Image (cartoon, rainbow, N blue to C red; front, side, top):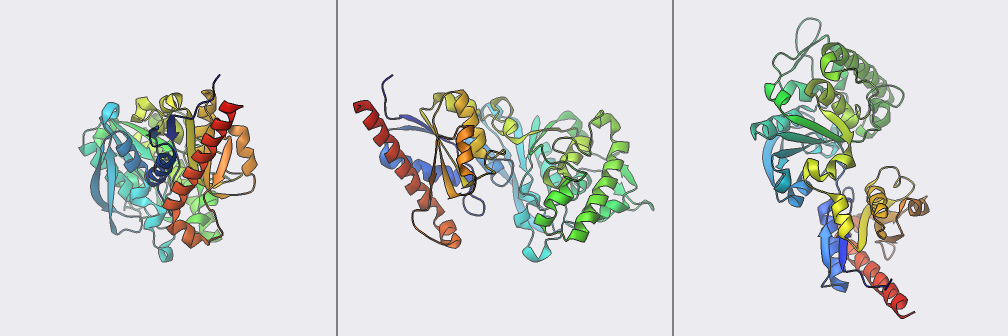
Length: 400
C-alpha cells in the first residue's frame, strides 16, 4: 500500500480545564494543521463530556442555537445561563448543561459549601426547554458545584419536598435530612411527554462507601463532618425517592444504580422523578441518532485523527476523551495522535488503548499561569510540529 500524506484530518479534542473549551482547542488545532497542509479537509468534533461547554459545542456542531436564560445559581443568586436547541437531524432536541446553572465555577470560593448549594437553576433550564416544545432533552451532567440530590431541580419543576410539619425544606443537601414527604402532584406534566436522557459518568453512584458525598464532597468544599452529614442526607433522600417514585423507578436501584450520583445526585432525581434514562456520557454525546453528532462517521472518513486533553497520564484510559476517541479510531484502523498540556505518570499506558503518539504543547519551561494564558497559540504550534513530523515520516516511507 503506498504511503501518502494525510488529506482528511479529524480534530476531536477535549477542553483544557480553566483554560480553553473543546471548541477553542479545536480551533487552535485547525490553525496548526492549516500551516502545514493548507489544502487538507479538516473535520472538527469538539468532544464534550456533559460538563462546561457541552451545550455550545453541540449547538455549533449541529448548526443549532443557544437560548439565553437567567436562572437561580447554586448559591441562590440570579446568574446568566443558557440551553441549546440543536439543528439538522437533531432538530427537536434540547441540551441542558447543568454546569451552566449549578456548576462549580458559579460558586464563589468563599461560599463553597455543598451542604447548602442548590440545583434549582437546572430545573429552570429544563422548564425553558419544555417551553420550546422539544421532543427530547439531553441533560449534561458534569462540573457540578452541588450535592443536593437534585432536590432543587425537583422543586423548580413543580415538586414539593416537605418536612414533618408540612413545610418546604430548605435548600442544599443537608436539608434533605428534614424531608418527610415528596409531593409530586404539581410536577410539570410535560415531563411525561418528553424523552429525557442524562449524559453522565455512570461510575458515580448516590450512596454507599463510594457515594457521591464521599467521593466528590471534598472537591466542592465539604469538611469531613459535612461529608458524613451529606452522606446521611442522601441516604435519607434515597429512601424517600424509593417510596414515592417506585412506579417510575421500576426496580432501578436509586442508591447504587449507574449514574445516580452524577452531579451531586442529580442523576437520582432525574431517574426517579423525571423518568430519565441515565446513560454513559459518550454514548449519548457522540450518537448521531440522539444528538446529531456521529463521531464514528467522522472517524471513518479520516486519514488521521488528532485529539487533545489538558493532561495525558494514568487517568486518561479511565474514560477520558482521548481514550474514547482512540478506542473508536482503532476499530476503524485509523492512526491517532494526542496533544497534551502536560504528560504525567502512566502516560505510556495510553498506547495500549490506541493512541499512537503523544505530543506535549509546552516547548520551554513555563509556569502554569503562563501556559494557561498562552494555551491557544501553544496548541496551534504543537499541532503544527505534529503535522510536520507526520508529513516527514510519510515522505521517508514513500521514498524507502
